[in-house]
Image 1: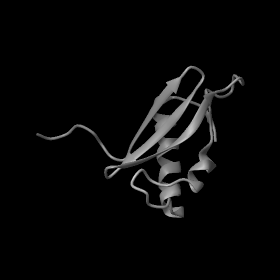
Image 2: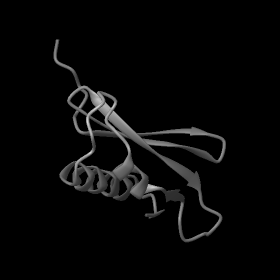
Image 3: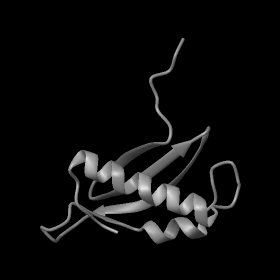
Length: 87
């Protein structure tokens, strides 16, 4: 059976006005905090820099190249969905 999941994959999980933005690849993931913006210019405020101090779910350190890949994937996801974010 062929999976229809594409990696890397970005998904959002909300709980009220706040939530997490997840980045998944190769069986591991990392997430960062997001919240709905009070500014009409943005849909979400994203705490992107927090990822630099986190680890992958597998326990590996997030490298600078990992961070760049995650940042680009988040921005492409937002653009594709028509979501304005303050990064």
